[in-house]
Amino acid sequence: DILNKQVNAELWSAYLYLSMAAWCESKGLKGFANWMRVQFQEETTHALKIYDYVLSRSGDIKLQPIAGVENSWKSLLHMFEETYKHECVVTDLIANCYEVATKEKDHATATMLQWFINEQTEEESNAIEIIDQIKLLGEKGEGIYHLDKQLATRVFVDATQNTAN
Ligand code: FEO
Image (cartoon, rainbow, N blue to C red):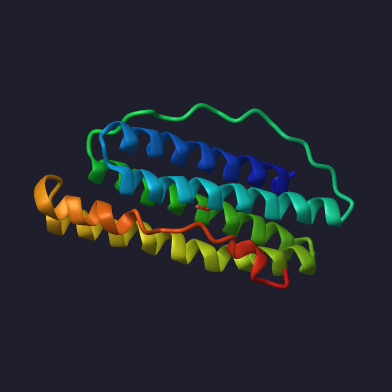
């Protein structure tokens, strides 16, 4: 049950980042939109990693409705602060899954979840890094133009495939 809920949470994350990508695109921030679109792709692979794992252990996948997401933010800074807060929530959800697996002595599931524990430290620090850059550069003018160019270079890599889990 808890892994099914995590599949839903990862898909909700994907949905949130796709909404953020659309917002950035509507503001002419194509680089930020690209970064969020890559984030969307990453989240779908997170959902699939758990989905595949549950099926590989002969578990049942029960997909639940995906709740709606916000579609506008006060500023870029606000959007990335929300991103950071959201990733902290996901970190707690993963930690909870891990604790349940450990308590149940389900070592295989705990091992699978270790990938997510590591991934979450990266997810949080990625958001913090961009928050810091926005604070340094401000939200307008040349600084944000260059940051947008930089974020345009992010390319999706399916990190879930680079592991034995
Ligand atoms: Fe799948 Fe951003 O955590």
